[in-house]
Image (cartoon, rainbow, N blue to C red):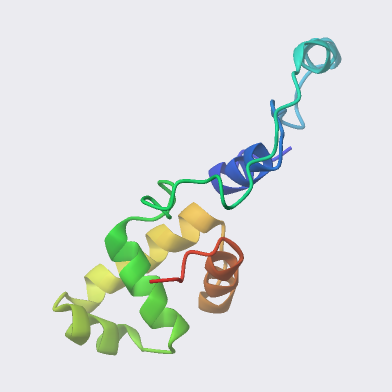
Length: 119
């Protein structure tokens, strides 16, 4: 029902083999169901540890969200990372968009749920 990439990755790991938008036609839905093949769920131990972000957030965005999780302000983040406040805001906007978050707290909650705050 959602086109959110993060949600689709989570569902794929849980064993989903296909996705349908809620605007799908009845015939297309029937075809999708008929051809869907169950996939084994990926356990966290089987997932590669080298790339923990799985393409969700860039390394810089991870740095920013980690500092957000530690309650740093945009100004403090900019000074620590030696970037402008505008760049911090851009990274924050990108993080929200990628995670489907609506606030700092929501973004932190989602990265915690995805286990992306580990260093």
